[in-house]
Amino acid sequence: MRFVFYTHSVVSDWNHGNAHFQRGIMRELIARGHHAFALEPADGWSRSNLLVEKGPFAVERFRKDFPELIPVTYDASFDHEAWIADADVVVVHEWTDPDLVARIGRAKLNGGNFTLLFHDTHHRAVSATQWISALNLEHYDGVLLFGEALRESYLRAGWGKRAFTWHEAADDRLFKPFPDVDPFLDLVWVGNWGDDERSAEIQEFLVEPARELDLSGTVHGVRYPARARAALADAGLKYQGWLANADVPKAFAQHRVTVHIPRRPYREQLAGIPTIRMFEALACGIPLISAPWPDVEGLFRPGQDFLFARDGAEMRQHLCDVLHDAGFAQALAAAGLETILARHTCRHRVDELFDILAACGNRAAVDSTTAKEAAA
Image (cartoon, rainbow, N blue to C red; front, side, top):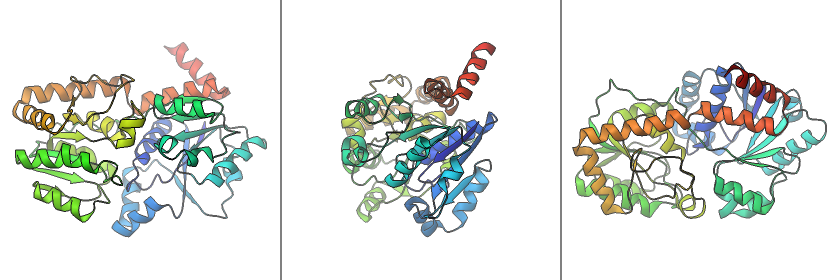
């Protein structure tokens, strides 16, 4: 089958975590013998910022790390209709320009034989409803949402014909343990500043515990203001800026524990949706301690796969427990990895995608699903 994914960027993951999952899904499809192409705007903000900060080397890194992926850039003169005419499936991410979202829908209406899906992995449906409500999804076959709470929001608003929950997951071809690497630092956090959506939480669950426990550690991410970088330095944490996602597994392997700090809109308005960083960290077999978020969908086994810290004091205690009890840390890491491999890899999500495509009437997906069931 031929898949076309409209992305904000597949080349750049600079302040753009959505690229992680899209890359993993396309890699899994290609590994199964399908064709997958990523279309992205030539002037997208993530790619543009990455080039300003790191130069052409960053694009070369992408080609080296993900040689099987085929990115295609488009501008105002690009012939989208010709590009998607022979596709079996077109998936349009919510970062796509609204006019282009509508244009692709019209291509579907005017004889397109592909299954057309809209993919939302952001909180704008609840925090900036005018953005989503202005989109024309009339001719889309379905909408993919990265959590049940978001799916319910779409259903209540009447956005799209069908709405499917499709959580993000880890690309376990990339995110995996490195048992031969001995950790030599205490704490690592990989996450962007977040437009003040979690600035207080970063202070409470990362900076203050690290300072009070005198931990060694590293922080990776972008858009940290001067005051945040100063706070990290005061806590003894080394700020190292952007880290290519392909380098994250080794960064985890060099540290003994990581933390998860969700953005406030997810914690308060979209229950049950962790960031993809949590899936990726657990896939790497590192103990994880999370700031509060409601796991209403039962994605994990809290207390077994990872630890919840209700406040800064509990975060400090959990960090002490993990860092001073090697057996406990090992058991926690093993359980988290077990859950990822059992439920939350891109292989699982591609299986789910084929079920969704079959539900939307895609004949090739129906045949593929039937053949898989017969083989089982």
